[in-house]
Length: 390
Image (cartoon, rainbow, N blue to C red; front, side, top):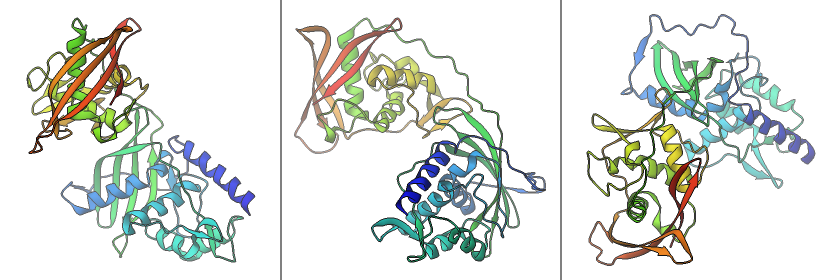
């Protein structure tokens, strides 16, 4: 049994890795036309329910697919992991717990739970689900259970563009966003049943992969390296790094995201903080919003943190290739009150910034941090790279 479960797990992993690759499947008389349908607005509860469901089902959306009531067919989009993982995630969201349990020392799901959750998302009959799962080699009759997916993540994310409705039928038009920021267009057909559940009926995704073409901004030449080190220290302490984790030598992907999205504070027009910031030209003002392109964000994250190919979907528009943030605060509830820069006597291209940070609230006790940056030259560009903070 354990050997079969390991083989099953390997197949699930393969399904994960192919989850963002379009594969053709027959679409028997399924239409994704929105003619004579009404546009669902974001003020409608159905929009948010569908968005939550589509985000959980994102691994299904990398293919063309179609479900029928009397046949549980996992040869296409929902093969193994995509189907089971969505059910498991839905249970965690709804009940704040996993329905997977340790059964005879194994991480498994009772078949009754699998069927109950399946019927909330797919048009299969209970009999079809029973016949499918009990015929699998990984099904255990003694415990009436199957292996539970565990530890797998989605490779892609989605942005819903529009949702259309006619009676109980919904057409969802979306963008499937790849891990590197490219995207393709897709459509899904959902039906709302008598219980108010949105049932996945069919889906279709374009094979064409698109990516926004945005010219990179020329990096500003640094002429005053100590001033640049001070500006970066202000940025990281005030708005980016989670200081309760200091000392540290590297930023997380989320801290890098905070660094990118708080770059608006250094916009020349705002004059909020130190104008010597090396990447001040990367932020563009668009009305009341500020934008940073993905190519510029990736360069900044590469320079400062040494991270290649950085990407997060949050606040990202794949069509324009831009991150957009409102003119609002993003910070650590502290600000740099004073900073002094020293050069390492043993390494003249290492800058040490001693920082005194004070609370934005009533705490009168200052915090003290030491940030270290190295002057790096790569591909004809010279910049400062974050080394550590204590």
